[in-house]
Length: 474
Ligand code: BG6
Image (tube, rainbow, N blue to C red; front, top):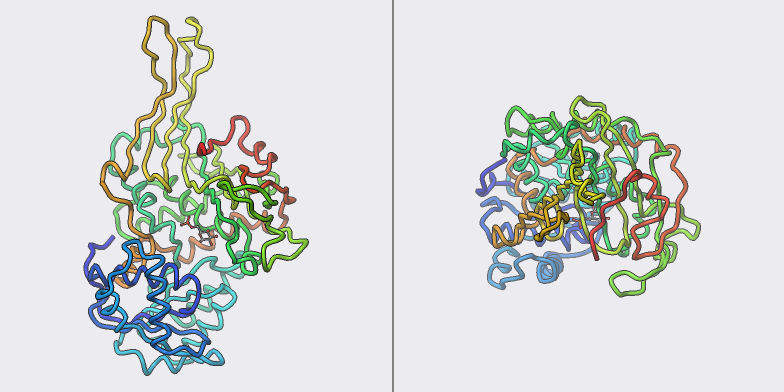
């Protein structure tokens, strides 16, 4: 991964610049890169969309996004300097040729911040406008709708832009805690010895959100939790958790190992998955509507907002170890964690002195919030009797580094501008991810309702059994 310095001179084109992603994430991230002198020294930031906006309107949109969502807030002088680089080019009839007049560099990167249904037409339009030469593309998820559409999209892309200029983004890889997992696993000699089927009994990954579909009902209807979170964010976390040590820290070495994990996923059986959809309920002390009442959602929709699944990896390291994945919207809290449960002691010595139940040792990697790692183990309670209690050793970002992790999009935008592919998804990786969920997408199991504010439908408990899910305490 690159040292942080300004990337080579190039223009940045944000396609879909009037949308939510640009407003909440991309423009604030570009602003913060500008503040930290991590944008290319030369080059425009050109927003485009089928809207009759001008530069001034685009700059106001950016100012509003930065004010509301920048992790460092807004500094007026710094924003004014940044805004000088912002330009807006309206597009009509999908013709991208008018962009050419606003590009000052030979090199450029185009960020496709648009719904997936628009990808193909835009990629073709880039080629038709004669803009393929010198252009790299950052493309948002979900990449395709299933295996065959992902393959078709890869072909569309490669007809215009070669793979070494394609950056398939999954912002989970930009999260510090996900990157730290690589360092934890491969920078510490103690971790490798316990990171396998001999020491580990099961691995749980939870991506819980308290938010609902948040105004994205129309888009979400086409996607659902499996495509929105499981096939991409969760599989990326899984890949980093389960991969073999790479031969170096180079992009291809890391991506080679990640793809092997995804290829080793035993095709997921629909019986090993429970799908759910939130009904009305209370979340974080607020009454919220059910998914079916969200704007843009069909009255009889069976789109899942929750999925829990059990899967296995056909690999020497992990054979026989269950990987339990669970994600949902309108769960009690926002919490992304990996819970590694270690095997129990072979002989329970303390039974004779009256301790009948001992908790398993567990490691919890807190991806967000309260970023850090906790190791839970059993200790003797002080006193004359042998009584045990589970205790915890913790590492927390806040305490150790006195700072909260930076925004994933800043890191990822900088890396793509700098030509570093390490944290982006390769063609074969995305296809392997789709192949793993193909069976459940073809014959999805039924959807069970769960009240908003609960941990999903009770049917999901079956997936974690024997044992139970390890939830954040709310
Ligand atoms: C996005 C999904 O990719 O990730 C959203 O489309 C989801 O549905 C979001 O809310 C979660 O991201 P984070 O960084 O808040 O975990």
